[in-house]
Length: 105
Image (cartoon, rainbow, N blue to C red; front, top):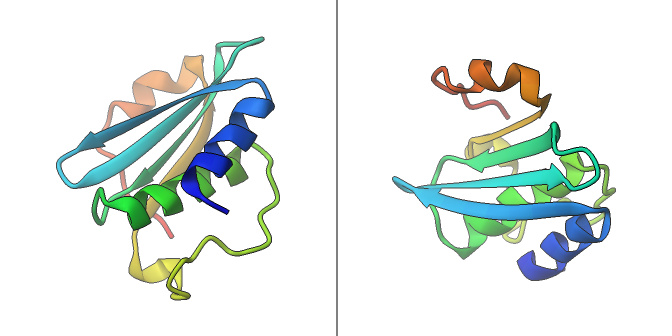
């Protein structure tokens, strides 16, 4: 499945998806249209190329409840080698996201 197809699947669930690239990092936000206080954030900290964008989209899709069968590892290696941050939150927790983020695998 392509990055574009993953994002379209998330959008088909009623989310708006936005991608940000800053300082060799990819971050994606998915905001639920019917309840904008509910959103998901995924971040890939090891680059901002196509492969990192794909892995970030996979993490976002999983956070939104999409079951992915392919493991979202285009080169077949474990995500432990590629730091990814993902969080699901409510807008009331947004200030806590402003603190420095810690990557988790």
